[in-house]
Image (cartoon, rainbow, N blue to C red; front, side, top):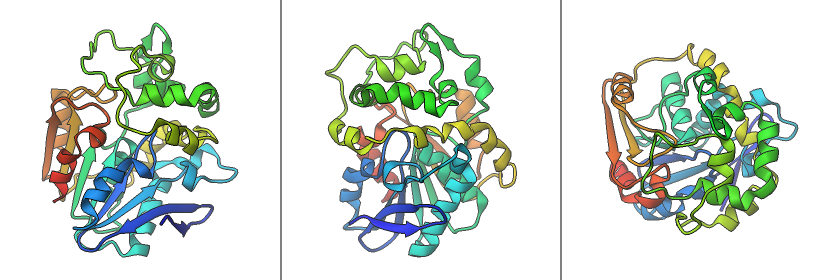
Length: 295
Protein backbone atom coordinates (compact mmCIF):
# COMPACT_ATOMS: atom_id res chain seq x y z
CA UNK A 1 0.00 0.00 0.00
CA UNK A 2 1.28 3.47 -0.90
CA UNK A 3 1.28 5.85 2.07
CA UNK A 4 1.39 9.65 2.08
CA UNK A 5 3.36 11.98 4.33
CA UNK A 6 1.90 15.49 4.34
CA UNK A 7 4.65 18.08 3.97
CA UNK A 8 4.36 21.84 3.59
CA UNK A 9 3.07 22.02 0.02
CA UNK A 10 2.67 18.43 -1.19
CA UNK A 11 2.31 14.79 -0.15
CA UNK A 12 5.37 12.54 -0.22
CA UNK A 13 4.50 9.00 -1.31
CA UNK A 14 6.24 6.00 0.22
CA UNK A 15 5.83 2.35 1.16
CA UNK A 16 7.27 0.53 4.14
CA UNK A 17 7.26 -3.25 4.62
CA UNK A 18 8.87 -5.82 6.89
CA UNK A 19 10.61 -5.70 10.25
CA UNK A 20 14.18 -5.41 11.41
CA UNK A 21 17.05 -3.20 10.36
CA UNK A 22 15.89 -0.12 8.46
CA UNK A 23 16.76 0.33 4.78
CA UNK A 24 15.59 3.38 2.84
CA UNK A 25 15.70 3.47 -0.98
CA UNK A 26 15.95 6.68 -3.03
CA UNK A 27 15.47 6.53 -6.80
CA UNK A 28 17.01 8.77 -9.46
CA UNK A 29 16.07 10.07 -12.90
CA UNK A 30 14.09 8.98 -14.87
CA UNK A 31 12.74 6.43 -12.40
CA UNK A 32 10.16 6.16 -9.63
CA UNK A 33 9.56 4.27 -6.40
CA UNK A 34 8.80 1.05 -8.30
CA UNK A 35 12.37 0.99 -9.62
CA UNK A 36 13.31 -0.89 -6.44
CA UNK A 37 10.58 -3.56 -6.56
CA UNK A 38 12.81 -6.56 -7.25
CA UNK A 39 15.29 -5.66 -4.52
CA UNK A 40 12.51 -4.71 -2.08
CA UNK A 41 10.83 -8.07 -2.58
CA UNK A 42 14.11 -9.85 -1.83
CA UNK A 43 14.64 -7.93 1.40
CA UNK A 44 11.22 -7.31 2.97
CA UNK A 45 11.19 -10.65 4.79
CA UNK A 46 14.52 -9.85 6.43
CA UNK A 47 14.50 -6.08 6.94
CA UNK A 48 12.21 -3.09 7.28
CA UNK A 49 12.25 -1.68 3.76
CA UNK A 50 11.06 1.85 2.97
CA UNK A 51 10.85 3.16 -0.59
CA UNK A 52 10.13 6.79 -1.53
CA UNK A 53 8.72 8.53 -4.59
CA UNK A 54 10.78 11.70 -4.38
CA UNK A 55 9.60 15.30 -4.63
CA UNK A 56 8.49 16.32 -8.12
CA UNK A 57 7.89 12.79 -9.40
CA UNK A 58 4.31 11.90 -10.33
CA UNK A 59 3.17 10.38 -7.02
CA UNK A 60 4.81 13.24 -5.09
CA UNK A 61 4.22 16.13 -7.46
CA UNK A 62 3.80 19.73 -6.33
CA UNK A 63 0.97 21.88 -7.57
CA UNK A 64 2.08 25.24 -9.02
CA UNK A 65 5.75 24.43 -8.42
CA UNK A 66 8.72 26.66 -9.20
CA UNK A 67 12.23 25.49 -10.09
CA UNK A 68 13.72 26.32 -6.68
CA UNK A 69 11.26 23.91 -5.02
CA UNK A 70 13.62 21.16 -6.16
CA UNK A 71 16.90 22.29 -4.62
CA UNK A 72 19.00 19.89 -2.56
CA UNK A 73 18.00 21.44 0.79
CA UNK A 74 14.31 20.76 0.12
CA UNK A 75 15.03 17.28 -1.21
CA UNK A 76 17.06 16.47 1.91
CA UNK A 77 14.46 17.89 4.28
CA UNK A 78 11.82 15.62 2.75
CA UNK A 79 13.88 12.55 3.58
CA UNK A 80 14.81 13.78 7.06
CA UNK A 81 11.13 14.35 7.85
CA UNK A 82 10.22 10.89 6.57
CA UNK A 83 12.98 9.27 8.65
CA UNK A 84 11.75 11.07 11.76
CA UNK A 85 8.07 10.36 11.08
CA UNK A 86 8.63 6.63 10.55
CA UNK A 87 11.34 6.44 13.22
CA UNK A 88 13.79 4.76 10.88
CA UNK A 89 16.33 4.40 13.66
CA UNK A 90 17.34 0.73 13.55
CA UNK A 91 20.89 0.95 12.11
CA UNK A 92 19.58 2.84 9.08
CA UNK A 93 21.07 2.18 5.65
CA UNK A 94 20.20 4.60 2.84
CA UNK A 95 20.54 3.25 -0.70
CA UNK A 96 20.51 5.83 -3.49
CA UNK A 97 20.71 5.48 -7.25
CA UNK A 98 21.69 8.29 -9.62
CA UNK A 99 20.17 11.48 -8.13
CA UNK A 100 19.15 9.38 -5.13
CA UNK A 101 22.82 9.08 -4.20
CA UNK A 102 23.19 12.88 -4.25
CA UNK A 103 20.21 13.25 -1.91
CA UNK A 104 21.43 10.47 0.40
CA UNK A 105 24.87 12.10 0.65
CA UNK A 106 23.31 15.47 1.48
CA UNK A 107 21.10 13.93 4.19
CA UNK A 108 24.13 12.25 5.76
CA UNK A 109 26.27 15.40 5.50
CA UNK A 110 23.64 17.61 7.11
CA UNK A 111 23.78 15.38 10.19
CA UNK A 112 20.18 15.90 11.32
CA UNK A 113 19.37 12.17 11.37
CA UNK A 114 21.44 9.15 12.38
CA UNK A 115 22.60 6.94 9.50
CA UNK A 116 24.81 3.87 9.80
CA UNK A 117 25.69 3.33 6.15
CA UNK A 118 25.24 4.71 2.64
CA UNK A 119 25.15 2.59 -0.51
CA UNK A 120 25.43 4.98 -3.45
CA UNK A 121 24.91 3.53 -6.91
CA UNK A 122 25.92 5.13 -10.22
CA UNK A 123 26.15 8.56 -8.63
CA UNK A 124 28.47 10.71 -6.58
CA UNK A 125 28.27 13.26 -3.80
CA UNK A 126 27.20 16.27 -5.89
CA UNK A 127 27.14 17.46 -9.47
CA UNK A 128 29.90 19.79 -10.68
CA UNK A 129 29.02 23.26 -11.91
CA UNK A 130 26.87 23.39 -15.05
CA UNK A 131 29.73 25.24 -16.77
CA UNK A 132 31.48 21.87 -17.01
CA UNK A 133 28.64 20.58 -19.19
CA UNK A 134 28.33 23.81 -21.17
CA UNK A 135 31.80 23.15 -22.55
CA UNK A 136 30.75 19.74 -23.88
CA UNK A 137 29.24 20.18 -27.34
CA UNK A 138 28.25 17.28 -29.57
CA UNK A 139 27.13 16.92 -33.17
CA UNK A 140 23.50 16.92 -32.08
CA UNK A 141 23.70 19.79 -29.58
CA UNK A 142 24.35 20.51 -25.92
CA UNK A 143 25.02 17.97 -23.20
CA UNK A 144 21.65 16.90 -21.79
CA UNK A 145 22.40 18.47 -18.40
CA UNK A 146 22.91 21.82 -20.11
CA UNK A 147 19.62 21.29 -21.93
CA UNK A 148 17.93 20.49 -18.61
CA UNK A 149 18.65 24.01 -17.37
CA UNK A 150 15.47 24.88 -19.28
CA UNK A 151 13.09 22.25 -17.84
CA UNK A 152 10.03 23.45 -19.72
CA UNK A 153 11.75 23.19 -23.09
CA UNK A 154 13.39 19.85 -22.26
CA UNK A 155 10.08 18.44 -21.03
CA UNK A 156 8.36 19.56 -24.22
CA UNK A 157 10.95 17.70 -26.31
CA UNK A 158 10.88 14.48 -24.29
CA UNK A 159 7.09 14.43 -23.93
CA UNK A 160 6.66 14.28 -27.68
CA UNK A 161 7.35 10.55 -27.42
CA UNK A 162 7.63 9.25 -23.87
CA UNK A 163 7.72 5.64 -25.06
CA UNK A 164 10.80 6.27 -27.18
CA UNK A 165 12.37 8.35 -24.42
CA UNK A 166 12.13 5.56 -21.85
CA UNK A 167 13.19 2.90 -24.33
CA UNK A 168 16.27 4.96 -25.10
CA UNK A 169 17.02 5.83 -21.47
CA UNK A 170 16.83 2.21 -20.29
CA UNK A 171 18.65 0.53 -23.16
CA UNK A 172 21.76 -1.58 -22.60
CA UNK A 173 24.93 -0.59 -24.43
CA UNK A 174 27.35 -3.48 -23.93
CA UNK A 175 30.29 -1.83 -25.68
CA UNK A 176 30.68 1.92 -25.43
CA UNK A 177 33.15 3.92 -27.47
CA UNK A 178 33.57 6.87 -25.10
CA UNK A 179 35.40 8.87 -27.76
CA UNK A 180 32.29 8.78 -29.94
CA UNK A 181 29.66 8.90 -27.20
CA UNK A 182 27.12 11.66 -27.80
CA UNK A 183 25.51 12.81 -24.54
CA UNK A 184 23.39 15.51 -26.10
CA UNK A 185 19.72 15.44 -25.16
CA UNK A 186 18.46 14.57 -28.60
CA UNK A 187 20.86 11.66 -29.02
CA UNK A 188 20.79 10.26 -25.51
CA UNK A 189 17.06 10.38 -24.96
CA UNK A 190 15.29 10.45 -28.31
CA UNK A 191 17.28 8.34 -30.76
CA UNK A 192 18.89 4.95 -30.65
CA UNK A 193 19.39 2.15 -33.10
CA UNK A 194 18.82 -1.09 -31.21
CA UNK A 195 15.30 -1.76 -29.93
CA UNK A 196 16.29 -5.26 -28.87
CA UNK A 197 18.67 -4.22 -26.11
CA UNK A 198 16.18 -3.01 -23.53
CA UNK A 199 16.39 -3.72 -19.83
CA UNK A 200 13.78 -5.95 -18.27
CA UNK A 201 11.55 -3.06 -17.28
CA UNK A 202 7.93 -2.26 -18.01
CA UNK A 203 8.18 0.67 -20.42
CA UNK A 204 4.41 1.00 -20.72
CA UNK A 205 4.07 1.44 -16.95
CA UNK A 206 6.73 4.15 -16.97
CA UNK A 207 4.98 5.99 -19.78
CA UNK A 208 1.67 5.81 -17.90
CA UNK A 209 3.35 6.90 -14.67
CA UNK A 210 4.84 10.01 -16.27
CA UNK A 211 1.84 10.85 -18.45
CA UNK A 212 1.77 14.38 -16.98
CA UNK A 213 5.35 15.00 -18.09
CA UNK A 214 8.84 15.27 -16.65
CA UNK A 215 9.13 18.98 -15.96
CA UNK A 216 9.35 18.77 -12.16
CA UNK A 217 11.87 15.91 -12.17
CA UNK A 218 13.97 17.72 -14.80
CA UNK A 219 13.87 20.81 -12.55
CA UNK A 220 16.18 18.99 -10.14
CA UNK A 221 18.95 19.56 -12.71
CA UNK A 222 18.13 23.27 -12.92
CA UNK A 223 19.28 23.62 -9.30
CA UNK A 224 22.76 22.15 -9.74
CA UNK A 225 24.64 25.46 -9.35
CA UNK A 226 22.40 26.62 -6.49
CA UNK A 227 22.93 23.25 -4.80
CA UNK A 228 26.68 23.85 -4.73
CA UNK A 229 26.07 27.07 -2.81
CA UNK A 230 23.64 25.42 -0.40
CA UNK A 231 25.99 22.49 0.23
CA UNK A 232 28.67 24.84 1.51
CA UNK A 233 26.64 25.01 4.72
CA UNK A 234 27.09 21.32 5.49
CA UNK A 235 29.80 19.91 3.19
CA UNK A 236 32.15 17.70 5.22
CA UNK A 237 33.95 14.38 5.18
CA UNK A 238 31.67 11.62 6.44
CA UNK A 239 32.69 9.27 9.22
CA UNK A 240 30.11 6.56 8.47
CA UNK A 241 30.45 3.53 6.21
CA UNK A 242 29.98 4.46 2.55
CA UNK A 243 30.04 2.18 -0.49
CA UNK A 244 29.98 3.59 -4.01
CA UNK A 245 28.88 1.11 -6.69
CA UNK A 246 29.42 1.87 -10.37
CA UNK A 247 28.71 -0.04 -13.55
CA UNK A 248 31.77 -0.51 -15.71
CA UNK A 249 29.70 0.25 -18.84
CA UNK A 250 27.88 3.27 -17.42
CA UNK A 251 27.57 5.97 -20.09
CA UNK A 252 26.20 8.57 -17.67
CA UNK A 253 28.85 8.25 -14.95
CA UNK A 254 32.24 7.16 -16.27
CA UNK A 255 34.51 6.23 -13.38
CA UNK A 256 38.18 7.23 -13.62
CA UNK A 257 41.18 7.32 -11.28
CA UNK A 258 40.71 11.00 -10.45
CA UNK A 259 37.07 10.41 -9.48
CA UNK A 260 37.95 7.31 -7.44
CA UNK A 261 40.56 9.29 -5.49
CA UNK A 262 38.14 12.14 -4.85
CA UNK A 263 35.41 9.78 -3.63
CA UNK A 264 37.78 7.92 -1.31
CA UNK A 265 38.81 11.24 0.24
CA UNK A 266 35.17 12.19 0.91
CA UNK A 267 35.02 10.15 4.11
CA UNK A 268 36.99 8.06 6.56
CA UNK A 269 35.36 4.72 5.65
CA UNK A 270 34.72 4.85 1.92
CA UNK A 271 34.88 1.96 -0.55
CA UNK A 272 34.53 2.34 -4.32
CA UNK A 273 33.52 -0.72 -6.34
CA UNK A 274 33.01 -1.26 -10.06
CA UNK A 275 30.68 -4.00 -11.33
CA UNK A 276 31.61 -5.73 -14.57
CA UNK A 277 29.04 -5.89 -17.39
CA UNK A 278 26.82 -3.38 -15.59
CA UNK A 279 25.72 0.02 -16.83
CA UNK A 280 23.75 2.89 -15.28
CA UNK A 281 20.84 0.59 -14.43
CA UNK A 282 22.90 -1.68 -12.21
CA UNK A 283 20.12 -2.22 -9.62
CA UNK A 284 17.95 -3.75 -12.35
CA UNK A 285 20.55 -6.04 -13.87
CA UNK A 286 22.86 -6.81 -10.93
CA UNK A 287 20.58 -6.66 -7.91
CA UNK A 288 22.76 -9.18 -6.08
CA UNK A 289 25.58 -6.61 -6.04
CA UNK A 290 23.28 -4.17 -4.27
CA UNK A 291 21.78 -6.70 -1.86
CA UNK A 292 25.23 -7.93 -0.79
CA UNK A 293 26.06 -4.40 0.39
CA UNK A 294 22.94 -4.35 2.57
CA UNK A 295 22.90 -7.81 4.14
